[in-house]
Length: 64
Image 1: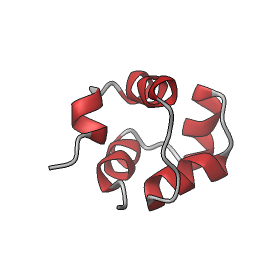
Image 2: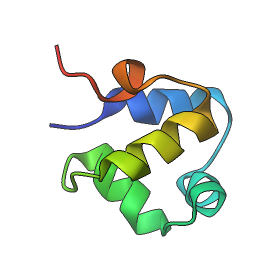
Image 3: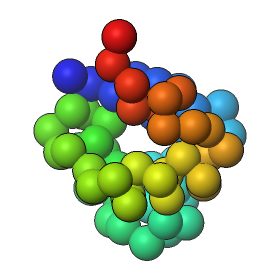
């Protein structure tokens, strides 16, 4: 399942995948795969992404 909430939050902060990846210490490909739903990130990575985007885990990763 694609993570459109992550993509929207990243775009709202005017960050590219590369810029977000650099902030949290992963590759651009990792961010792309998370957004595409092809990679299930660890809890620590989810938390790092949330902190970088000023969002909660529920806001970015909770599935309805």
